[in-house]
Length: 539
Image (cartoon, rainbow, N blue to C red; front, side, top):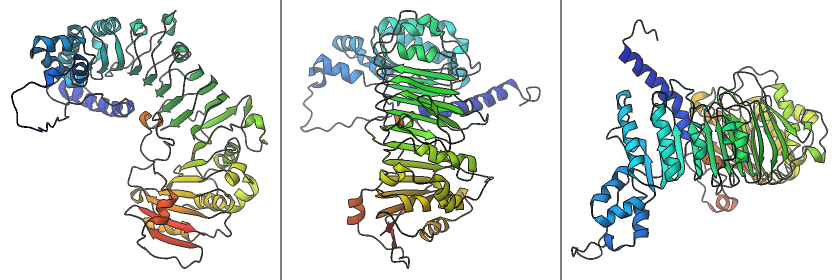
């Protein structure tokens, strides 16, 4: 937008709009807010009111817990009720969220000074500790002095969770090294900053930090490694769109989950050197226009159970000292036998990418759940058929012996997708269920019925096992929704890749089917489960 033709106010509004688009992805990566201004408390009286203040009869510990679950403004208002309430408020671990300090939302550029002043007042008025401080609105490039004062207050008063996001323009605002003095942190997320030089760490550490998120942060190589090494109980490391640091080298005895999600910029190297407790490694790229391959090297990770999204053509996989290549015979030193859940992002129409797929699969002989996302291929390089898979892929041991569930997302009914499915269904011995998630018909040249028919009518031949194939019709965006850190770090979810959850076999057996129609084939029966689910039973 040319500033010579647009008044300053209009140009500022335009930049604000672009900034919101830029930050929208970042916000989805942040932890959920711990308190809400829209929650409503419903009181239910067992007896008529007798005028007795029963809330004040509660013990101080319980009242502190109640206050710590209120937005900062509401928590502060309790201090005027009585002397006791003020004492309780002063000792309660508070939550400060800058977006709650305004009477309206969304804010305007003119609100920035008021928000900064409100945050300064909230942090100064309370002696601490702070359960959570979430500051995502302030334009800190213009308020460096206030930022330093905030960090000093948080260090002195004890903050447990901190989410600190800068509003861009300028984008690379340096974070003061005072950040390294926040020794009480259990969770830290920072966004759109220039990370302080890790040399400033010296002898300090983060003894209580369990979760670290860096979103669109400019870091130098080695800075993240240094913070991880000084965080003895760190379990979750999330990185989104590192803006300078291209290499990540992990040495940790506590990490359980590492997620690296890049967009325009690409992490050139991710090396798991020694991670004794690492269970989940998730690497995904929303957009890679540079053509640079990410080197993913696995050294010592004896508990690694979940691994994805590996992309042939975009990821180079290295196990130990061996680079995995097509045609290289798998040996025990090249196998990650602990991995049970594997996710691949594959462009089935590109020959060189498909040739990598058997090599990748051969490194995971004990995979039980395989999740495949089919990437859109505008210019296929070859029409791959069943003969390719039978001749070149050969008998992949984990496909034949281990895989019990499989999901195939973004299925468009293309010939090169069907060739893989034919090979898979003919070869697998342990498969119980497969889910084929059809791409949103709004973004494809085929209808829902055409995509389903392409699977139902394909010539498969003899089956190695009895299994069921369930279809799900996607109503989401093309290429699926962006990955979120909350999905991957939710340890109670055994398989976060299975966004379309497999229906248990007993449910399929016991449900009363509404017959859509029966295919005239003794081996295949097609049923309708619901508006979006269809199941094919292969016998």
